[in-house]
Image 1 (tube, rainbow, N blue to C red):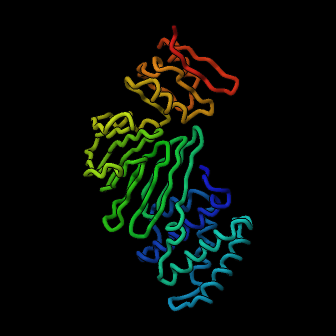
Image 2 (tube, rainbow, N blue to C red; image 1 turned 135 degrees about the horizontal axis):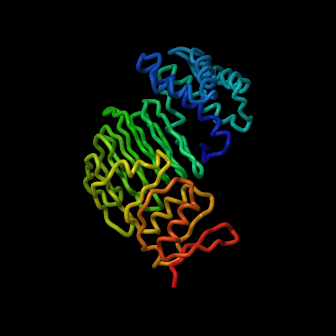
Image 3 (spheres, one colour; image 1 turned 90 degrees about the horizontal axis):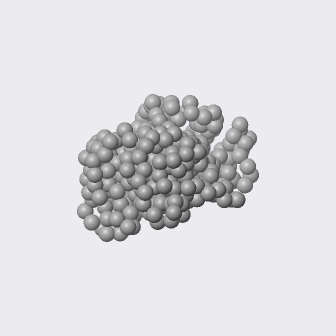
Length: 330
């Protein structure tokens, strides 16, 4: 998984996450949790960041003044700069933000300064999947070609699915609600396991377990609450529609499969392209409207092309730039 911000911010992410965990434990009185142990074991850099945050945590107490805060920040920054993480000097402003967030949290003023100012960004490459674990134990599984932004505002968890697909297993907390923005749609967690698929301006929300409400922020209508197995689809060309679906088909991407059931070739190609560096373009309206059903392995672009060119009246033309054009046969 790679960050959309520069390399320094990507490297900083373990420190910020470690600071958030330290604040969480300070506020709850806990010393560990299953989600924390999973995060700690996921990457050696997480362990190094946690050790660095723990070292700096006791740098000052409840009554620390501004001078002591700055001194502690300087010491923490120097310590961390010399640690195994070996961050670049160019990341110095972000070091200060992270260190201040950690140290101020120790003084009881609050520890989410960095997340409040700038979201953490997660991005998966072609044919890559990953999992994001939030500080509260919520898990978000990212599909290939997905971009997610996470911002903790203190009294709420504010997420944005910029593009791609993700499955959200959310730890419900009425005192700290979670919202996911996907285009104009705002998904409101009510104790939920749900899937969001965003391709361009089209958004598909599928409820797997629990409860979820979906509101359109442009229309300002009453939120629509879904039941398990229901799917809400909306796009600029079509008003919101709710249908009952096979949840196992919707989540098949987690097992490396894509299952299509009588879907337009244009929307099928959009999803196939998430898993390939070789883009496919549907070149004409006649081909776009053709319907596709079948099961495909993610990343098997050639297998997909073999199927559609043999079972549909379309041809594939390869361009010099690597682009593949699907066209209806005359």
